[in-house]
Length: 115
Length: 110
Image (cartoon, rainbow over all chains, first blue to last red; front, side, top):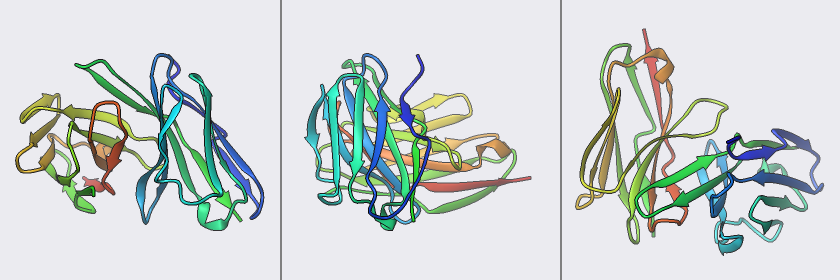
């Protein structure tokens, strides 16, 4: 398995531009999570989906952020318009749970810089 | 509310043993995870504790006390490559999101 795949790995954009981050979860995993990591705040949960349905988006900072999961193999996190304080590493993770076993795997992340 | 506390930094020398503590307060509790994260990389899974007690996996062991809201990660025979951030995370229910502590940066010196 290729693991959780995120793109792009790095993104540099100007303030005010739209940014779209992409994630392909591990096949067979039924939950998908978006996190943001900064030195000051650590790893923060933004939103997560179960079976493609958004369950908890209370971590989304404001209306500039939106996330979709149109099918089991793809999700996007969009920031519009972007601001310098959005600069961070954004991780996508996917998970499965069988009742006896639990797996939770991260992608390589997207390092976003807004100038 | 949910709160996960762990020390910010720790230092140790090669060959030594180090224990990284984690306390948690969550509304509901399913299990406790430990992840390792090297600089510039993604977190990678180390351990998952559901029941009280110690689980050993090679040089790494993890302990959980549900009644005390406490866990620790024990690293033995430290190597330079163990220099990394160690993240404690709790899940409220199986299948829900993990909530992470801010991580403990471990520096191993020769």
